Image (cartoon, rainbow, N blue to C red; front, side, top):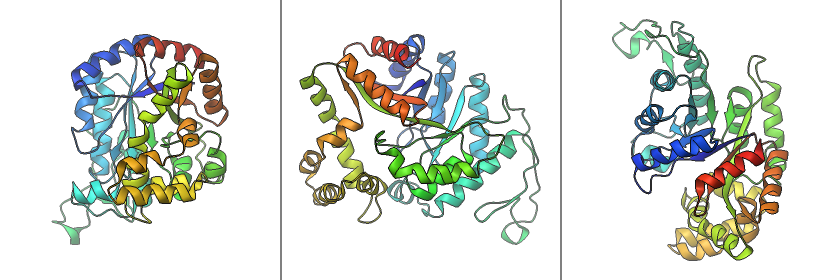
Amino acid sequence: MKISMQLQYAGGFKESAARVVDLEKAGLDMVWVAEAYGFDAPSLMGYLAAQTETVEIAAGILPIYTRTPTLLAMTAAGIDALSDGRCVLGLGASGPQVIEGFHGLPYDKPLTRTREIIEICRSVWKRERVSYEGKVYTLPLPAEQGTGLGKPLKMITHPVREQIPIYVASLGPKNVELTAELADGWLPIFYHPEKAADVWGDDLAAGAAKRPDDLAPLEVVAGGAVAICGPDEAQAVRDFARPMVALYVGGMGAKGRNFYNDLVRRYGYEAEAERIQDLYLDGKKDEAAAAIPDALLDALSLCGDEGYVRERIQAFRDSGVTNLNINPVGPDPVGLTAKIKEWVS
């Protein structure tokens, strides 16, 4: 089992990158660099490539709408070259608020786009002349849509690897099925290890049945806050996550168009999910956070004494997680990371 961590920017990016150097020495296998509507992820990933030696540098995630498929391939290949083969291309659909609001692009056909982007990226990395006829992307552009001068081209430079790992952030049934079919890894948010099989088991099996023989088994990345502490401190750590969970479950999307709310409903919290969303959309954010069930917060984290944390690690492992994504909480995150690395090895 690997361990990974989301890069934190609270103290500044350069300071966070310096911490990654220490975490790398403690056994951190992979670091995730987010991109929402702040700084772009690839610039920060390139900086990390120059500062580190072994940790995998993962986009977590690049929205599929904001770049052409070939630019995604070029970007991943560039970071892979800078890092000597340590890039992971994390892809996801983001949401209509960001894509239509910040980027001004229609939020359409996420499944089709994801499939076609994966296929085009892998063609680019093999230095094939890119000729693709899809439902969303056609390369070269048809003559009637442009000048007619486009022609199939192959990448000028030679990528370090012909197949850079592609991880997909997905939650819905069809998207998870697609992930299990084509991606190298899966990034589910708010992962409940005891209920994962009930929610996604059929989707993962359907995708795996169509998975090409040349792809390795699907990697699964999930986890949560980690703290070794007493019960009162553990509750405080879990409570710290309430505003963020409320934001996603209550505010990330309108009624009927919130993927995270749908997930919590699938976990069996139908009434609670509806109440959280109603409160949040009414502007009652604190009440929405308070309405999140304690049992859900407990399932999404690894907080307690050493024995309990080790039990939670085993629960994630038993559910199929191959990469434990941790957020170490406490005075010594580097030491805690080293301890978790020892336990998962």
